[in-house]
Length: 230
Image (cartoon, rainbow, N blue to C red):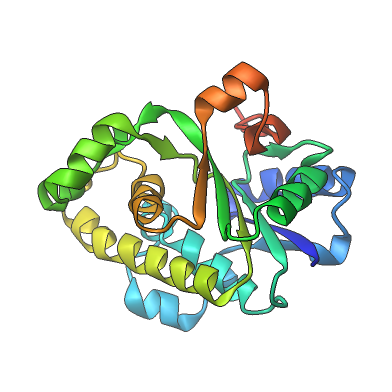
């Protein structure tokens, strides 16, 4: 089992990505295990599916995220671990040990993601408000939205399938967002929320567990700390 990390930066975020790489190295990630992606590394297939994808619409309303993560997983060995962080987020030393220990203890987990501190309904797009089942709407009132800016995936056939499903969920929604410009929701997080309600191999770490005990992936990530002009 080896551990890798990755990020994605459009043109406006390349400086943050360079800074973040230094912190990945300080957190003891091997240089050859760091994947720094940008739009030029997205395959033709991606732009065939979303010709309107650009920086302004978050490269297809965040559909770039599961797409490029999937492309990295395809390069890794079975059982390897991949950490994704948004480029504005700073990894803290100790994150590698936490990830390795957590996945060793949880053999049936494919994906770990920290929870936000708000319910899914708070950032739910008009598209999903109109199309989700009553059960999922009710669940969105109670359960917190996952923090899609930081997640770890164990490379398995199931996790790769989950990433592809996540991509197609974001893709389905993106077509509607191109029409209505419903930009107030967190499109990557609400679709990841749907997956977390379907698959028990996705572990959404409790916000309260972190606040009360200071434990979880969130402990090792300083969110938005690399953001310019905060």
